[in-house]
Amino acid sequence: MSSVGFDLDLTLADTRAGIAAVYDELASRIGVVIDSAAVVARLGPPLEWELANWLPAAEIPAAADLYRSLYPSIAVPATTLMPGAREAVAAVRRAGGRVIVVTGKNTPDATRTVEFLGLDVDEIAGSVFGADKGPALAEFGATAYVGDHVADIEAARAGGAVSVAVATGLYPPRELRDHGADVVLGDLTEFAEWFGGWRTPAALV
Image (cartoon, rainbow, N blue to C red):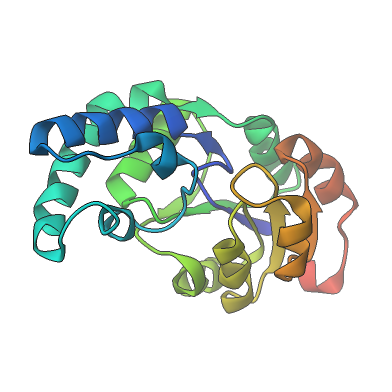
């Protein structure tokens, strides 16, 4: 069977409105200007990396803790499915495959998000980015990894998986191809058809 890994933000889940709202609340509470529109325009890297654009290093840990305390009540209820997300997961299930979500979001919030959206996944690995996602993908036996960020291409490579990129985030199709994606889809509405025709020895476990 073919097991598949998926990124979360802007791949399975549209978290932009919720994340923007959390940053707006955070900025209000700590008295710092944060452009939440700029933040959501470059989603992908870890929270602490983004906070470094707005705060001195010494203030980041406390701000990150506050952000994470706000996330469940503000961001999760504002999250929606990306187009084709539920159908993509279902396509893997119909083929007898397993699904893992591997994301830079911390595992508790990733789990809350997946459960809120009602996605049927086997495992969730959080707080990993780029090539650091590789070990989780390899341990799970993922034969493909689907994500919207160029760092997700690095993740697939590190995990020995086929890189399937969706142009639903910061990067247009050409940039995803230029960074080495094996497959580029407009969004997850195209996934089921691609997956149904994907039959190579490397894809079977």
